[in-house]
Length: 253
Image (tube, rainbow, N blue to C red; front, side):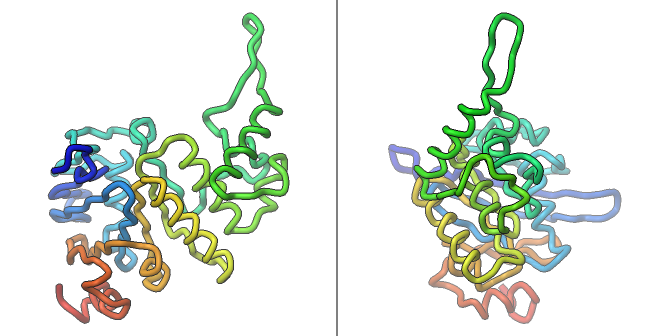
């Protein structure tokens, strides 16, 4: 282990088991992500990848197994605790409010307020300016911070969600199907934002069924099938075709 702690994963999940009654959704899965690394998490629908992430983000309590965050054994009983630890998730639906502005969405749950005595009100101007500056600082340019999120394209919405997570000090960024239903151009932008997050030292989990997209972005590929770990591979160990075959079971680990 190095003195600066870079060899310690941001998160390490060991022997994770999750049962729902008589159904075993996860059976002894190991998964880890380091700082400055994009870890692809792949599997067919129902493979267990979403359940694994819900265990990591406090939505589900594991039946057994351990989770270490920055080298410390942790209990994550809720999404609020996960977020306070520095785990941010950009879900497929992005958890953005269409009728609110970019600035309001950027500060959602962290609103800036002004206070005079017992009276508080939203600092709309401050949020607009800071959101614009924060997004520009990380390479995301917007037309206006007051524009409604519902008018943005899918790629622009993804950029806001990723930028928000990075700005507020996330240590681990989880991207759930980030390129789903995006055009080629917008997909390239999202992959570029993912690379930028990696370069700023975040650990990134890239969940997808699109092998081509994750192969461009990820450093490692963890494949789950029927709730069990198939394996974790580096890019020099597998091709896109290898990954597709491992997902479907046409190739064994």
